[in-house]
Length: 255
Ligand code: 6PG
Image (cartoon, rainbow, N blue to C red):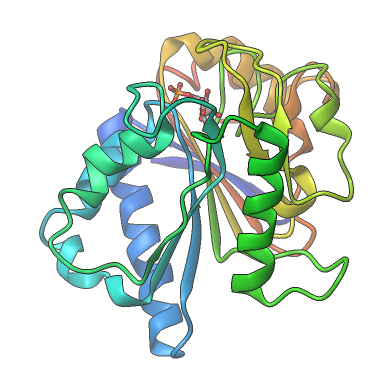
């Protein structure tokens, strides 16, 4: 395992997705335990897509299953596809299959994004209200997640913040409906960058050869956040950690 560390950002390379997921699962459990010891809820926004499925399954298995204070865990979503919640394209469906159905303990809170609602703008505003109520936000205040999990698409997107789309420039809203930029080409709901960058810990999970060229551009290339939205993930007062596997890190010079 090799790492490169800059102020508030580190990139750690693993041999494969399994090793990367084990590290992420340990980080999840450690952060959850730390919050629980302080009698605070552990607020985490889950990533969708396929990469985090391995991580979610690991959280439901010994020894991590016993380490995590599930009653103190508040699960949120970083983004969602606007499809029925039981659709194979739904991030909730993936999390339900890999985590919720398998963890044998009651979870403190599960706050799914209502991608199933036909009016996507109303769905985004509903989730904003969910965040405002849970985090007890004053007008204009941002929620501060303990952890936000993110994946990176081969196009450099994260959450459902796709290249050259209006949602990239949203500075006020917490959640917006966004246009798709990659399959499945369905409308999306997504946290905005102000929310993402206000997190205490942001963890990118990036695995696979198909991400290698984009990952090198995002991490080592010229700034171009319009084309590479993941470059806009810069925590204002938190830690950004990239967990990458060997295949995705193939073109990195600094690792
Ligand atoms: C989504 C995800 C998305 C995902 C990336 C990477 O709803 O699609 O939230 O941002 O993290 O597309 O997806 P993979 O992990 O499947 O490569």
